[in-house]
Length: 257
Image 1: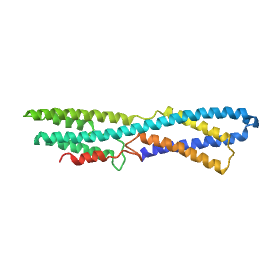
Image 2: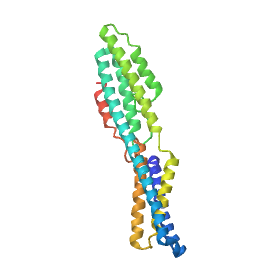
Image 3: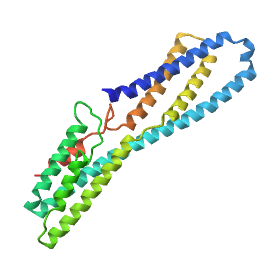
Image 4: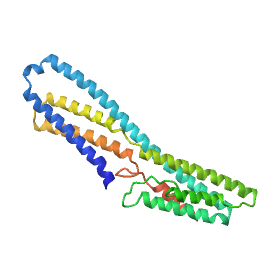
C-alpha cells in the first residue's frame, strides 16, 4: 500500500495547497484597499494570470504526455519480452531433449518473476526478464552455453538461443532503468507554485459564497487528480494503474511444455 499512498499523499497535499491559495486570495481581497482593484490593476492581474495559466497548461500537458508515453513504452516492452521468451523456448525445444534443463530454468525464472511483480503484497520490483535476479539469469545463460551440439542445426539453434537470451537481458536492463526514472521534483514544485498563484488570483476577484467555494474545490480536485494520474503513470508496476501481467502469464503457459 505504501506505493499507492505516495502519489495519493502528494495529490492530497497539492489539493489543500491549491484550495488554500484560493482561500488566501479571497481573504486578501478584504484586506486590500479599493484602489488595488481599479480597472488598470485588474487588467494587469488578468494579464499575469493569463500568462501563468498558459505556462501551467503547457507544462501540465507535457507531463501527462510524457508519463503516458513512458507507461505505453513499458507496456510494449513487456509484450515484446513475453513474445521473445516464447520464441526462445520454442527454439530450445527444437534443439532436443538436451535442452530440457535450460527450458525448465526458463520457466521457473519466469514464474518467479510473475509471482514477485504481480504478487498480492504489491512489492515493487523491476525484474521482468526470464530471471528474477542476475545470478539466476547468468545460470540460465550458462546452461545454454554449455550445450554440446552434434549437428549443424543444433549449432545454429544454440547460437540463436544465446543471441535471444542476450537481447532479453538487455531489454530487462532497459526496463529496470526506465522504472527508476521519475519526474524531477523541482519541475513539479514549480508547476504547483504556478497553479497556486493562479488560484490565488482567482480568489482576489471572487466574493466568498457557497458557489465560489464549490467551484474552487472542483478546480483544486481537478488539478490534484491530474498530478495523481501523472505520478501513477510514472510507476507502471505499482498502484491503481499497474501494467497487467497477462502477457507474461500467457508466455508462462506456453513455455516448458
